[in-house]
Length: 519
Image (cartoon, rainbow, N blue to C red; front, side):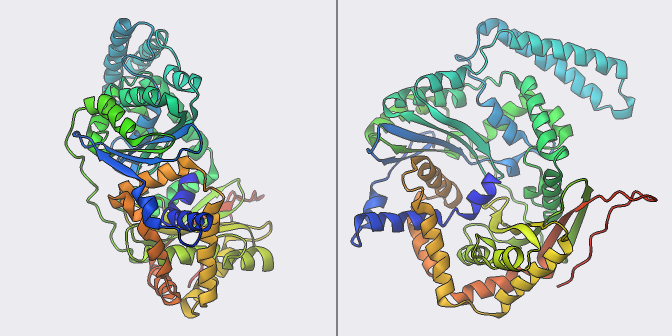
């Protein structure tokens, strides 16, 4: 759920940061000075570089942010953005091989055998089982031979041996990010290596890593009741837009990933103009620019990738999903809301906070503290993405002996109160205060700040929007919160997904049905 939480707080983060900086520096703190301390460069190939010098420690947090995510996956290769994230750690033409010349031949063998296997599988019922068996055996042998000449984890080991920490990456529906913190005197090493993996990606271990992703899917979706619930919920809520596709991919698509298809995807989306590098820490902007031109400037400029044109049609009525499993009940309810850049988003975020964020929220007090019908309930605005119109969602787990139906009834009652009763100014000020306090705890987190800078550059096209969010949230009124509650949180605009516990019965093998709730 990491991305879900990050999406909800995306436009509140800077507000909190600015208020904390003001508190730290006094009431006369000049917000424009902070904005002016950030340096921005664009290379000739279109790569954007954003630098915030902070010299309190000899460390720099580094983020490579790519404007491509699961929503951009090709139709026949769902999950490919996530797969490419895995492949980015497998080294380059100059890092990770004991025998580069022989490795190239062995990788070509893998590709040749897999293409034959793929084509045979596509024959469906007309495929030759014996041929598939033989080709599978050949493929396994080819994978084994190719693996024998590589240096596993060579790329990561070099960075970590030189003091790198927090080396990681993540893929969301909207973006792919690669992150690490390095000693500031190792900046050039990072520049050289990070640019190399996006200049000459070799995509080694392609077919071996594919099995790792397959197992990841089994663990997080196929063998996870909650994972199945989330996947079914999103595919039901989104009938047209690719936010409804599984981020990790369908199993049949994962099995058909090829190095050629992955390379095409890379060339299409990992173009310099579609990437942003954000650096926060002990660096000099002029040094960063000099190194960036030296290492990143060698990457050739390529055409801008296409953007998603599909628009989710307006929902015409409630949609419901029921999954029966040997697991505790759970429920997800979602309503369609606009993209992050829409003027209603600050009010929608405030609505989500009041409704289901923390122990003072309406749902917590009613469902957990008072009625005791739930053990966990939370709400978010902007999931599973924020770049395109998304969802306002509520996650709920009933208490032992309670049902999804009981919880659903209470949720709608609390939403109705917010639709019919105007918030007090005091209640709304508490929402803003909670948002501000939340970031105070992470003020010195350079990595978090680097990611926020990159996020705003991607979503808004200008990192300076960070410094406009204070005005956005401060303009929210009780009337705004009531208006968005009425406008978006309607019965015809919602999707309800329930996980119900299978109850063993003596005479039948039926599950307890989900009760229908009407608002």
